[in-house]
Length: 99
Image 1: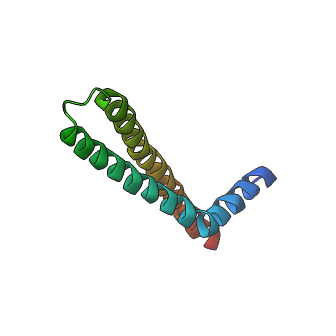
Image 2: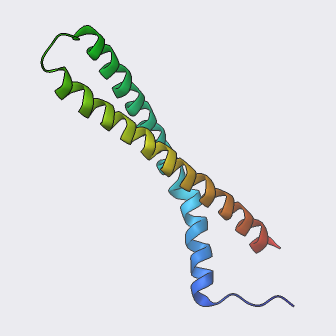
């Protein structure tokens, strides 16, 4: 006979299933927007750098643009991984609760 869930465990399952239904699409869209903006920033920084190779301000534009773009791409990777793992866990818990 399986053990009954504690009150805190039941609340965790409810919260996770609620997150999966309501907040997951928003977090997934946010991570995809971070990837899009990060990619645009990296590409535009690269184009700006190529067009201004002799300009003295190039270092002030290239380094922050590239770092911010890479930071946004990293945000996509980390948030996307978190969303996928939580969605997978919610699917497993949904199947277990339905039994």
